[in-house]
Amino acid sequence: MNGQISEIEMTMDFLDTQIQDAEQECKKNEKMYKTLGTIVGLAIIIILI
View 1 (spheres, rainbow, N blue to C red):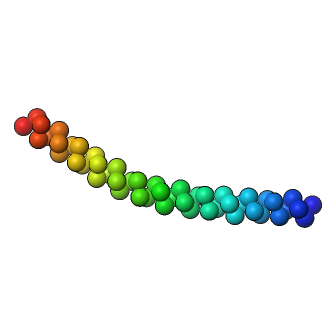
View 2: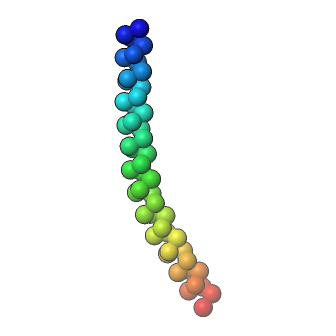
View 3: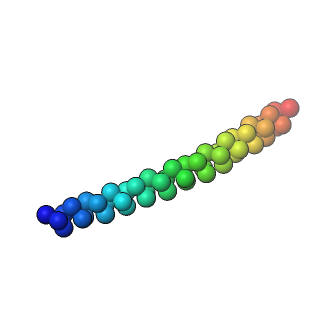
């Protein structure tokens, strides 16, 4: 029983780490995609003018 509890705690710690990494990646990519969208939008406007 103690072994199972230990495995569950290890899994929870691993999942917490994965969630933190995913949140950091999301924040980083969010900024990049916003910038990319702005640049593409400006390029389309320039092409149409």
